[in-house]
Image (tube, rainbow, N blue to C red; front, side, top):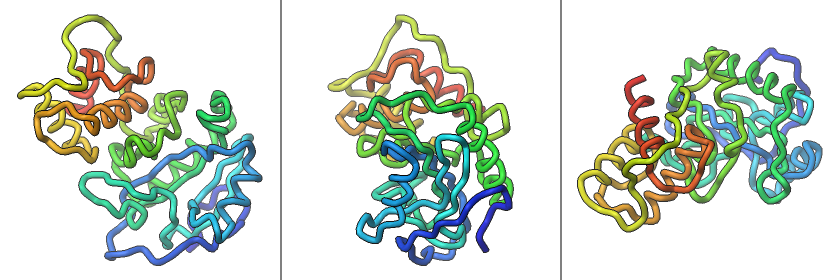
Length: 245
């Protein structure tokens, strides 16, 4: 079973194995390639030495290449966690979107690309009945280790097509905040909400380095105007709204 019937080309990667545990596909992970072109990304993802792969690659113009059968485990998420599941690759589909990334200038995602992402994602989540909260960034499942697809990725655009969990973030303003070195019940409450949402974080009441990294990942997805790892009022209120929505 190859998967989507959307127009695409097939270029299979050897970097695959069987999904483990017999669990259904329940997560869609979106990435950027971090390479200068889709061709270079495709070559790398199909190189046995790279030890990485994805199910789909979307090029600069929105074209779709399928590289791994959806029934097969691609090697895209790496060391990761979501809702306590640490083998994200076994229960997910991974889409790589061509963008050079933060180290190579990080340009905006092209409208044609976003249209391709929307069409493909809608098809995948519909066929696999993936819940909105489980349409995630690579940075959500691997905070600190990964930052893609990053703060320029247009999650609001996808939400307009019924893809993912997103709402207009609370405006940045003054007020109280939590940051590295803080501790106590407010920090514990923040950690508990982030963990309940899906992030891999300990609820220990200490605003430690891991907490800062997870807050930053949350901001990169849901409060993109400022990604600084500080849980200000805008960040906390946005998280509250998402938990209710």
